[in-house]
Image 1 (cartoon, one colour):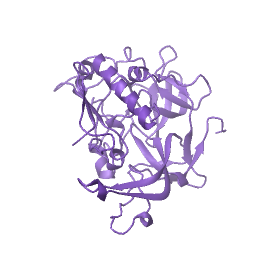
Image 2 (cartoon, rainbow, N blue to C red):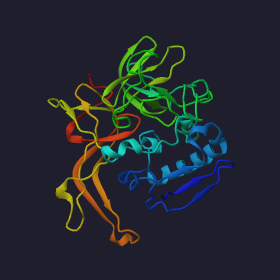
Image 3 (cartoon, rainbow, N blue to C red):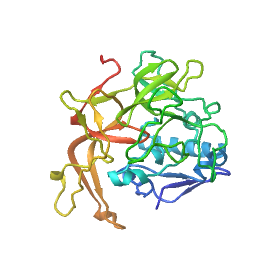
Length: 338
């Protein structure tokens, strides 16, 4: 394991371990590692309310704001992500991906400190929603902070996602996290959670409930008029191109086989176990050309960057970001008719 910066809880002290041009191994996904700078914040996920101090938030935000200016990184949740938003690279690896920083990290406060508040859109007809509960008032149930029983009530940045518009309805399923079982209310289980700042396509509203498209299904969260947990949001969406019943979803945006030069092993394009069916929409984060970095161990002169012709679109597919081939989907702007 390696990462670029460590943030201390007590006073926000920053320790740097790698240069920005170096690649760390912190996210469990080589594609993401090779394109990111990794921060580790001192603390325990299940006790984040105690470990995530104001000093830590302020130091971290100042550092990230500096890095964003230096490397021209947009300040939004498609680019500023937690380890718990990083996708698995293969179906077998999905269930063991990172869970930090977890539900107690106050993303809204963090983005305020970054100077880019998560305010959403003023357009009431917006076709996306931004998850935005009031951190202090939003105290959903979690289990697993101790050996038994519920976690102590405290502010959180997540909302639970149900299969129907009812608190009694089962949580939506994540076949990658729980291939044979149901999602749980565990503090380490993000299978049926949406987090502050994440943008999803609006699927339906019914009474005090809002539905979004999530992991190939309709997912409902409590969103009453008197205490909204989301706000309207503008932004582009993607949907399968006409004639396609569904498109494949990937955990990395690697090049086509013909792009690899002699001496660089080809990386197999393995889709994840999820399905993106026709008729569903997901928020578009960024579009990029397929790349793969073949690292030369401790000798950077042996590094090889393979660039393909295939383009990928990063989408907010579940709690984690994922990738689809640009050729497989149609981009829908805010102004386009549904």
